[in-house]
Length: 249
Image: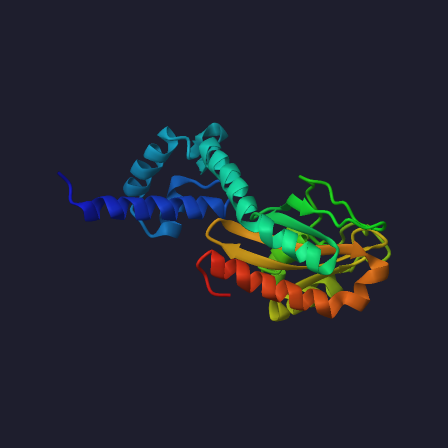
């Protein structure tokens, strides 16, 4: 019988390989995975084969390498259901406190999308579309994603001549300044940049279940007067959620 430590080492290496592929959604060759992981190619090949049998990774067309598989996507979907159950009471409390719509978005390496919402019960309100995928350079969740990248990586991702969605959509120079502020302060703000008349503020939350963004979305006519209150409420909410999930803010 192989010692328990051997099994733990294999799990650790398999986890490392999955994390590497998660950061490279277009896939990688075995040689490249081995290079990044600092593991022998033969070891990587053996582990990837086992992961492929469990559909946790799949082969690219033309046998050029591997990417995360269908089973991994199914696990992530189930994880999102779990995160919603964790977040729901916090989102309901926040929406009640500020009397505005609150949105939960999932942030992956490539995009962000709305997975849950609490819509404020008032005459003038915002109702985001569930499942919607947002432009990265105008929305709070998209900018939180970009803020995790270096400036040159941002340029590679979105270019420097993207379409303006409104008259308030920022050009690349102002967007990069905006991202620097997000990295420094932790808050992402959209003032009529995505849709005229709608503003939002959000924070990112990194959990063991993945990266998420929580945003307060309001008609712009109410936004500025409540901005400082929104910041306070979001800061408190983030600390409360991270403590519940066993992490310090």
